[in-house]
Length: 199
Image 1 (cartoon, one colour):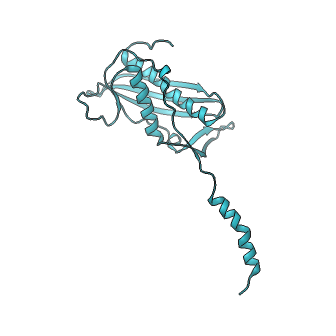
Image 2 (cartoon, rainbow, N blue to C red):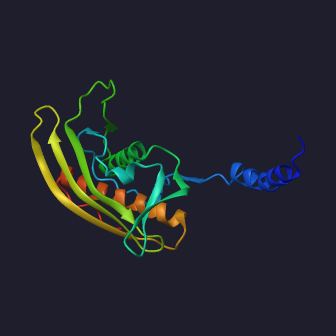
């Protein structure tokens, strides 16, 4: 059976299928490594274990979320986190805290070190979002507990706002990183009982 119209229809659709199947791959972004010039260590403090950050559901998505000017939260399928967000956030914060305290800091579960942690840090994040070319906001509450007793040693709510340097995702991700480092500044100061030196 000769159906020329069907052959022509298939030929017309073929380029569309090729375009859909060969779309550009998304870009993947890591939280940038911390600059050695920004590392401000206090006198060595006691060991700390950091539990996984409690993040809002949108902040756990592989697509990088951002707020639009109309207030809508969008997940960009073309801009993804290169690592699982909860893991990346927790480990970046832990590294920042270790650099500032000058002591042993590790994520939960505690590795088989000879010494047990003295403190446990828990962070509940209410908001971790921003606008491209605008500001990234990190808001929530942290708890510093005596690891052995499980009693709260200190707790406070926080609101950290970091401006982005331009409208790129590189700048957007860098602002996320800086917000976590500012939180590490504050918690390191509470654990050590001393203010961080000014830069």
